[in-house]
Length: 129
Image (cartoon, rainbow, N blue to C red):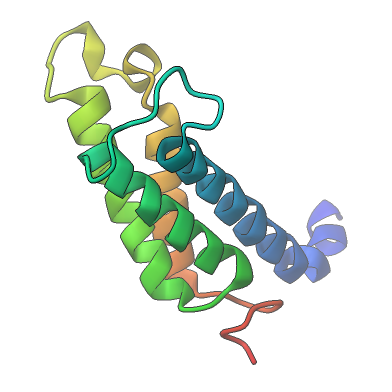
């Protein structure tokens, strides 16, 4: 019964998921590039700063649904690298777990954007037009 109620709304909910996730991702990039709500701004040209630029560009592309597959794939890879390099650090101790190394968001973004890359922009997107 619940499935029958929700199923007709799946495309609209997917569009909302893509738009909200893209905007939140772009905001994380704005934090890094411009130092918004951060203790310190990463140096221009640093790996963290470049990651922020990637987050802004891919986040906005995902949100509007333009070049979505490419943008989501790049965003997914960026988050996979972020998790491996900055959170997990290949530590096979207690820091292995995302709840301990504070990497849950990077893992969720990596898999969410991989899903979006596989599914495409869907409706309510510039790619659709």
